[in-house]
Length: 369
Image (tube, rainbow, N blue to C red; front, side, top):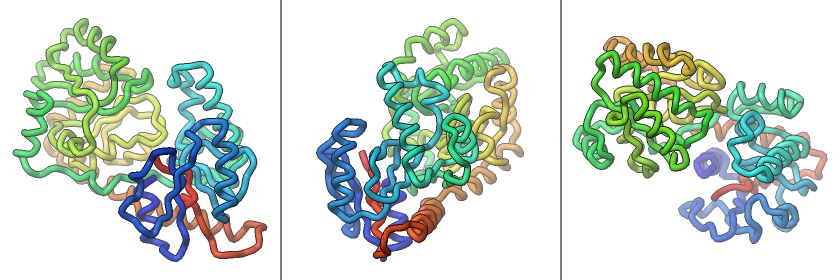
């Protein structure tokens, strides 16, 4: 959201922008004096938030609230846009550990879809799922793709890449997969595909990065059972500044995830000049276009075959890298900001409120940490 607000201010500086941040948050857009920032007293997902947010919107004379997550006031104080990235919490309720959390997330998502004047989602796939699970009228949903941050570019300096490899104990050529641990992310399917590659004699490592603490024990056991424990590395959470180097050093980026509402990491890998092999379902074909190899990640032998093709076919690799750069360029902050501003202007012009200068708050966005 930080990148979107910056891009919108650059695109349309004539409007007034207000960012409402969580208590104690001070870092969001600190360097941009054109954006007003205030801190709410209520925490995210709290009952008091439902009371405080409408009062803040009225106090600051806000015309449009854009909530970047599915938490909106039950009683609207102004025109409301809500971003619902996907239906993961409805498709995979087990992603949320507690029963109370699952019920609350489901209730808030349904409330947001009902109360908001417009819903933004990040892919046509997610739009279809929101219609299916929430019964939302299609015309109420606008697809505005997510975008890559400006800092996600390939590292060209071999010494810098080597330094990243040493920092995380990577000794061989490697396949990379990055992200949180959830069953739907299909880490196990990737381990099985990688075991097939090692049985075929390929000499490389598999690096699985990200906060996977709750799954590391299980994945380690499976790695031992498959005979690949000495080839699988779990470096944990990687700081943002190291990710371009980690991507750039990979021979292939693998994304075996069985459900993605958008799929950031394949795009990040493409932006860093790495061939991508993806599962052939949900939003991944839509987002990756013709720049990735697709295979059924629920079939380890098939996924291993696609990985091997991306590793060994030099002409294919060169073509995938070029197509990947081209595909990643589609997802820019400026493009998303333009589509978002068009939505605001359309909503504002159709509002029944007395006309005045538009003051979008994402701008009154319930934004930030």
